[in-house]
Length: 626
Image (cartoon, rainbow, N blue to C red):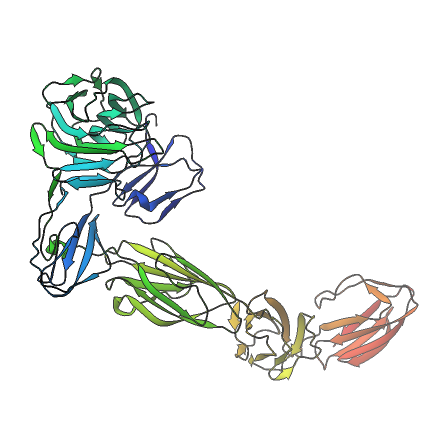
């Protein structure tokens, strides 16, 4: 659809996202939208040409808890004050996106009596939102906030880090809207920029800001609608380190100003229009750069919206807990880290929670392993399966999924059988919040015996005559009136499994098989412990007084038959280069009478099997079974 802005990817609360090796259709914007996660969780391949675009990342709240506030107190920045002799632990919790993440407790020992007092420390105001935060990207001091130009700006498809927003997507009504802020700091490097934004999202905004350009710093009014940006309106950059920036909105018309004293205002070019902002938007403070040299700092203070002061900072809570401990208890943990793992019977590399995949080999004599796992958070759950596929939705496999008993956070000495070849033991840790998950995989390649041989076949404890491992088809007779039969295999290969198939139903060796009809075929499949399955065929015949069929016809070595024998086929042709040859006829029934004629002259008679010598001209040999 014309004018549509389709982003390639959207992720909500995901971790360890890797984007690579993709092909994109025309009309797809190569951008990633994120919600409830940091952009550092997204890794983009160097040939993707994808940027991390708009998303919602609430400013995470840190809560610090002292196990004994009379010994140690902690403030909202994690600053610890010792009060009296003793030992206590301090545990940090990060609350973000409706989930909490717990750090390892830190133990503090106070060796001398202290008269320390806890002073208030400033932190970012809770009413503000930080989009795409980065480590060390912003800091708080007094009533001001400093943002470093650590990443790109917001121009076109660019994505800025540490965008601090007040009242994101708040309905401001139809009237005139004004925002003012004091900014201290000058652009230093080419493409540095920083300023005040009326902010709808990364692709729809109006800004008044200092921009460095190509060694030509100016104050610009920048407008962007659906990712299309323009910065034609500008004025000269003042020499003052600190300036005031002001944006006015009236309908779809925007005007930008700067001042060095907040009394005398200079207009930055002409007013512009942008009909994509509407009445619902936020006020943002942004600093970014397109230069490889990062870190230019800009300090913001004295923010006003429609004449009312908006606090950028607030005092951090002090005491045994630095935040609302009741809120902490209500939030479920997002910790899905596997703390420890061990697999007996094979040798894996040393386990680390940061490493998600482990590879090893096993000898053919290792038929199983035992695996022990423990999640870091006591409220997390663990599942494992063999040769399954782990993903964000579930674990799928043909084997039973094993879960920790009673929803506990650990599995101890769980036996896992190994097959020949690749075994993938997949472990999934599910955090208390039910959403956050981590997948760990242990890959064991086991050597198989690869032996599909057998040493013979027996029917009802009687060996089938003439067994040869190179021959795959055999036959045997049953007794008259027999209703079931048992088939055994001799010297089955090491680790191999045998399955018998009769009329589409499977049986194990030595299992009773019902007898049906005059003839039944038993398929024998030998699957080795690794390697290719071998197939044998066993034809079983039930004696019958009415059976007048031949079992086989054997021609002497000098006769070449033009077709294989088939008991249901009555005519054959053959050729020979000698005058006299021998032919043997064998009946399916041992008591059947055989009469052999040559050109209607009886040549031989017998019971069960008859051999005769034939002098060749152009002879017709016939037989009769009775």
